Length: 111
Image 1 (cartoon, rainbow, N blue to C red):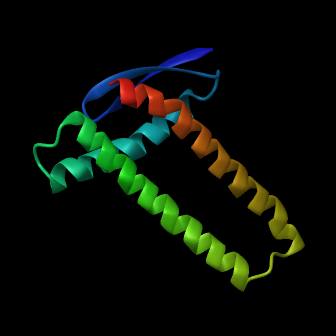
Image 2 (cartoon, rainbow, N blue to C red):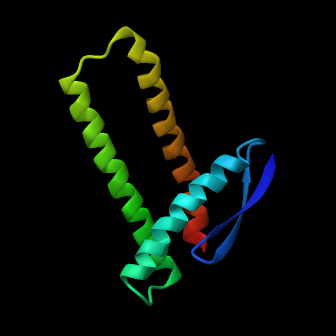
Image 3 (cartoon, helix red, strand yellow):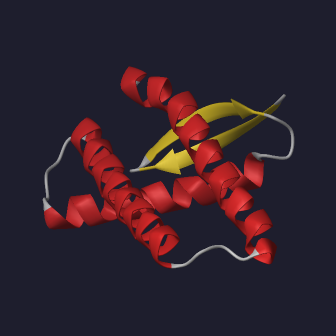
């Protein structure tokens, strides 16, 4: 098991992860950090918890829009046989994001 430290909204979060997932977690934390900065710029004086709440809401909104867009595309365009592996890969990534969110949520709640 590997350990890494993520910096989000000016705070360091030590996290354990599977070996080799450190770079992916670092990338995800940069996405969260970007949204946290947007929240802080949009509403100065937010507490750390509210900053992270708004960052999570921004990301959830984007994810919701992407899911809605993907669902609309699925109904409009039938998948070709060669598109099936790509569709499965996207579904696997979405499941992985949800799993990471579930894993990180208790750590954020404790902060």
